[in-house]
Length: 142
Length: 142
Image (tube, rainbow over all chains, first blue to last red; front, side, top):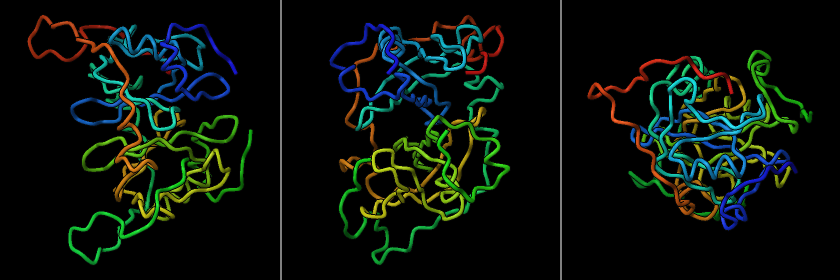
């Protein structure tokens, strides 16, 4: 596995599961509106910089370099909070996004990409307002 | 690159960028509250099933099989909309999540994983309420 040198806290590094390139996806979400802005990639050092500088840093897979979001565009992502998921292979970064998150100028990277989807309808529950499954066990871990 | 047989619309398949395992991340978001519930992985066929059945289907990397979310737990994800991102390597699925998204029983996979982060503060703009960068060009594509 590719691993670049990093100053990330070893206790956090020990919880990460990385792909063969040493990377994991990072979801950037606008902290107040809940918009999912983009998904970037981080390695240990990008996460370290994101946790310690107040600004999102990603690893650019195309350019093979660190990328401080907004460094050239001015469209910074100011970090509000960072969470690791249950199996340590994804982070969620809540940010205050200045301007457009997308390089196309759209607010989010998903604005222009709607796909035709069948809308699912949960079966009407027996008890009105019922939102919990009646029975069953937790899913196996992904 | 690994590619399993798929019935996905070729026009959509042509827009996808997959990793060497034929996969791309899929962010599941609760459609009304905006909660980011989890990140799973899809291949072409998982996306096809998600687009056509009204329920989220993922590819389980650990079990190497398709995985209809909630099939065993009852914690289904009912699809509201699906969008592809600007460079075709991530999808955002807005869903109605029944019960817990996480196999731990938490509502989201990020509930238990807060990391210590420095909170960033955008500089106070000269014009009060100013939210656009004063100048600059769009970021290069990731």
